[in-house]
Image (cartoon, rainbow, N blue to C red; front, top):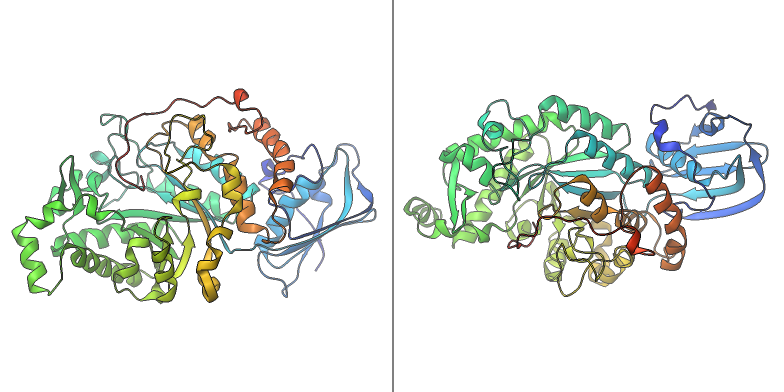
Amino acid sequence: MWRALALFPLALLFTASALAGEITPRPARLEPGRGHFPLPPGARPMELLRSELQPGLAAEAYRLEITPERALLVAGGPAGEFYGRQTARQWILSNRWPSVVIEDAPRFGWRGFMLDESRHFFGKAAVKQVLDEMARLKLNRFHWHLTDEPGWRIEIKKYPKLTEIGAVGSWSDAKAPRAFYTQDDIREIVAYAAARHIVVIPEIDMPGHATAATRAYPEVSGGGTGRWKGFTFHPTRDRTYEFIEDVLTEVAELFPGPWLHIGADEVNYGNQSWKTDPEIQQFIREHNLKNELGLEHYFVRRVQAIVHKLGKTMIGWDEIVDADLPADQCVVMWWRHDKPQVLERALEKGFQVVLCPRRPLYFDFVQDEAHKIGRRWAGFNPVADVLAFPEPVQARLKDRAAQVLGLHACLWTERVADVRRMHFMTFPRLAALAEAAWTPADVKQWPDFESRLPGYLRELRERNVFFFDPFEPATTPEPTGPDKQDVLADG
């Protein structure tokens, strides 16, 4: 059925691009035509674009046809129609639409970005701005890291101390005023994301990185190591699992998407107390667990059963690969770029995998040799390396590439204390991630992306989004940020 597009509530997404052809991410197929579709003075172009849904197309696919006579968008579903509008917006030149045929669909179904708000809190307006930028780039998974050592950022009705006590402090200031999202805030942001075809995935980190929670409720603490007191949940007490189930039940009700992320990384950094706790050591012996790692895996299995009971698919960082989990009920996020064998093992065991390796997809790494604040690991993560992914690991996927859901960038915020610096570390690398995740490998090319990048940077500037300019670095100087030394690997 033909229909004219109604006025769209997300009109802010459709400001015209200054030049045609600066479409990011680059479509799978683009064939310019002759002539143009005229736009009358004062016209709203999106109201002139006719659309129809075609069930035979994939849900995120679309075909955009602009001729002198008509502007037509055919899509496989609402998401495809939404993405087609993003492309149509970028194709506008002054007062006309150049003729073109664009046939497009994403390379990967999972195109994600993670924002850590435990270490530093940015607030609703900042998160909505991130979601707007994701939508423009056709990204569709927002991973929200809401709990960790410095702060607990989500209201849980049954456990008010999580926000009364656990929400106090940040990574750079242990006495920072408490900051968190109410459940109404969460619902508002989830709905805002859904209107942009973005699924929000909450992460409640456990059994490590649990300090904010155990500070509020010491009875579920499993202790820590040195400076990381209370780093873990207690892995043997039924009370711990009751607490976790209560928390995850409220979380699951707030986030309608199919996934729930439990973290499960870096437990060994802060579980030294397990080795000397008589209760824990007795539990290990009685349950025939090999050691503390075996107990960590026991914890993950129990929590996975809770997540499954709540009707969700559990996501965990790649440490979960060897926890003897049901592969069809879990997703692994491969983050340790220096452990490619873990990626291979995850695929061999049948897990679906999201690729998010530190090199090059951790955006807390510096993006230029001259930058001083941020991580390095035998180098840094420039925008070109982001675009080049995942080809460097393609050979390791072998015949299991279908198990790879997609790509995911992560911004840990130890050294990102304000929105300006958050933008600087994110852009334009987020555009490179979007192109790497959307554009077919045989179409994606650095020279082509580089030629379009100035137009994208110009649009960011018009929207008051700060960024790093790789062409003229002096015009976007590196903002200052906390300069405490990092210890843990993932943030």
